[in-house]
Length: 388
Image 1 (tube, rainbow, N blue to C red):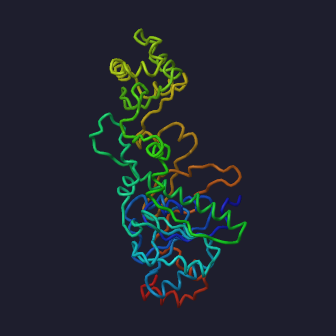
Image 2: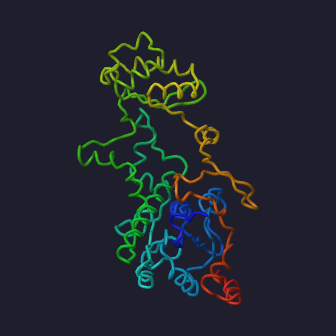
Image 3: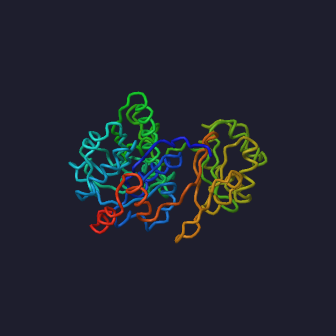
């Protein structure tokens, strides 16, 4: 069977909920051996369905790293690892859960790449602050741009689901892979400091740069009039963009070139001034047509149009169906679960769904006895003492 891209990389993950686990998932999906470390009581995210998605292709062990024995076991586990994914702050910081002394960890394994994901980073006046996704999202300034609305008085909202948290995980994974590449040349590991606030802000880097460079503060009402946007149609919503003259001509052709769509409207400034007049006409036409009709014909004419898909719509979307993007797996007690596959396709080292998310402590014997060389008697003792 074809070896996977990261088949020789060993990762230890001690992270909860989304950002850290998604970082680990991306590496596991690329073939890395990812050992997820949970407290003996289990990850608090286990009661969420997302846990099953975020932890596929991983091994799972339990360990109380807050106890002296647990720290010793953890140190042994890291001694042969290539990457540590952590959402804990350093021990001197009083972070969420048990602290980790990254300097001491590096002394024991100088080749280790330590990827630390925290709300605000390991330095600065906010380094000890706790936060949820809602906090980091709005702390990044993204909330000032959502939702796209002509009413600035409307309260800001965050991006739906946990897309922003996953974006933080992507930033961490990219940095970890870069550090592994650098280690191949130097033989040395390093500490990667990922601030979720900064990772989220980087998603909006062009807009964020406008204020310091142009003196402009972008808001959620900044979309120029006459460039399109979200529109209701017969059976849902679509997003249509006609920012330049070519796109507008294509959109006018899509509508059947109505008499009111004179050549003057090909100019954005003219269209913007008169958009209040033509918007109701566009919306009336939209409500007479289905999303599929508008999407298919609009794309053929070269007008950027896309349907707004619900989860149900996405599951049935022909493009996803054709590429087999959604996969299903039996999770034992959890039954069969369908979830998105890998967001990438590698021709020589394809993604494979090797194993479902681990049950609590499922691989304790395999990792502690098979890899660290502990006897079964020692394992039983650690279990009785609540260390694992």
